[in-house]
Amino acid sequence: MGAIGIHRLYAALSALVLAFVLLPLGAIVWVSFFANRILSFPPTGYTLSWYGRAWEQEAFRNGFITSVETALCAVAISLVLGVPASLALVRYRFPGRDAIQTLLLAPMIVPGIVGGAALFIAFIEVEVLTDFEIAGTLGGLLIAHGLIALPWTVRLVTASLAGSNLSFEEAAASLGAGPFTVFRRVTLPLIRPAIVAAALFSFVISFIDLEKSIFLVGPGRTTLQIALVSYLEWNLDSTVAAVATVQILIIGTLLIVSDRYAKLARAF
Image 1 (tube, rainbow, N blue to C red):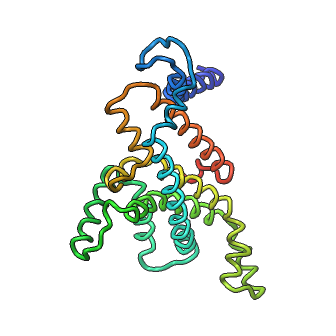
Image 2 (cartoon, rainbow, N blue to C red):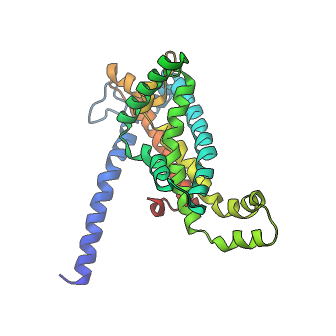
Image 3 (cartoon, rainbow, N blue to C red):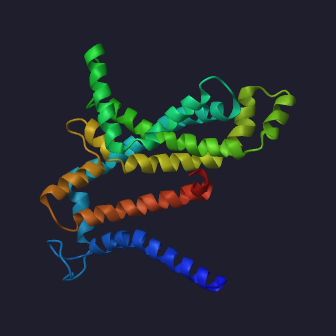
């Protein structure tokens, strides 16, 4: 097989893999327009009514609002903790540095269901010892989502810092700029694209989380993912597909914008 044949085979395999990934998403979008009252194939017609029905559902509406608010808080937590941590890990050498880096990235490795159960048990233990309620509260949910987002912020910002030119910071320091001035005037502009990408990616990771939320969400509160699972227990129509389509559009847009600021493939 010549070079041209190998190239064509590689292109064909790549197209098959891409189709395998995209076809289920395309199917969900297609199903969201089915007019069938009970989800079935082929469709009897097409309609946009499922999108309006989804927004009329209080569980979906409240779940969407809660998911957005939680994701925004997770972004703030991950940036406040992740950016200084990344700066320390890249710019300084100290005992236990590798262990701290592994600890910060651990939530990325641990399966979500395991992490959610572990956090729930840990919160219960804290409640027993301190009589301070965490499990089932908004604070506990925000802590969990902050932990979800933190590793991705550390990963993206660390990669940006490692690839930046240290001589600019050294030049600013040699001209009399203090550490804070160097960070604000030199380091921060250099890593701003990574920070923006980290914020957007952290939002996505928090927004789509189900495993930790289902353990830690309190009574009277729900996230969009939990609302979807609960709806599917008793209903089989295109409302879920409509909600999923909106999520695909939101998440896809945020990932494209994130990749515009920092090439995600380089960080992973």
